[in-house]
Amino acid sequence: MGLRWQPGALYGYCYQDSNDIPDTLTAITELGSPLEMIQLLQTSWEDRFRICLSLVRLLHYLAHSPLGSVTLLDFRPRQFVIVDGELKVTDLDDASIEESSCTSNSDCFMEFPARNFTLPCSVEGRCQNMNEKRNLYNAYRFFFTYLLPHSAPPSLRPLLDKIVNATGELHWGIDETAAQLERVLNLYKSGEYLQNTTRISKSEYRRVPEAFIPDENYRCWPSYHHKGCLLSVFDVNEAIEICDSYSQCKAFVLTNQTTWTGRQLVFFKAASNHIMPDPDKITYVKVTD
Image (cartoon, rainbow, N blue to C red; front, side, top):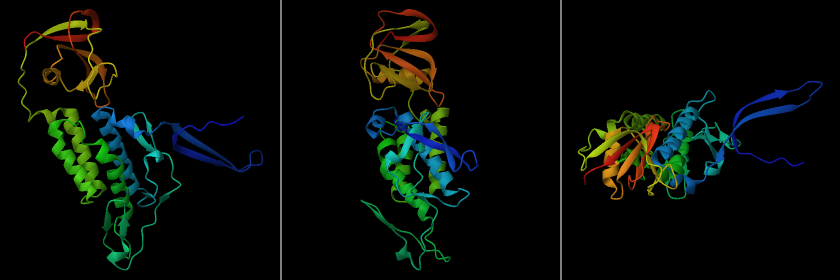
């Protein structure tokens, strides 16, 4: 009888050595989904941001772990899984806490396929923050450049571009990178990122409580629903802005579902010919263009 391997993140382990069960190691893992970058690029920006945020939180922990600064020598995406929407590392075989020794800055050379860096050599004879900086640059080249800026809310793009550029040049350490990503999260969750945008609707909408439009779907990207246009919004005004921005949008439906940030999921519709009662939803129908 063969065993089928399931990808997962190590949760803990127990070692038992007794007369009854000699030399037994029990590993406890949480199952996750393999990281598929092509699929991630097709998901919403909110979910891609969550991946990057969970990765930075992980790297922040590794930089300040009880063992010292830990670097992941094999940082390829296949070393990670997604558990409940967040990134977890699966393979710690290539983790190291050894900071490179040095006698001069030239000994602190980090080589990557597209870029090289030289870090300072400390008076203690160790390359300063090499483990942390190696992790951070790998996060930039494997994750941030692909997942962070694309299809992000326009008002957040300058800050996101700043984060990507700063990590790509290693101008920041993990503490500043984590603080800036947490700032993005707070701006997004609180709706503050909408304050500097013009929020004047081009159209008027009629509110229809306890109503739903079952059909009349159109596709948009990125969407939480592969056959329709299902997006997250901070409030009704943002839903109106989105509907105004799509020429095919004639109505939208507020659901009672929320994303991990607490934002409301909204179906955008191409027509409102068939409205059905639904106590958990509110429909807004465009009455003027």
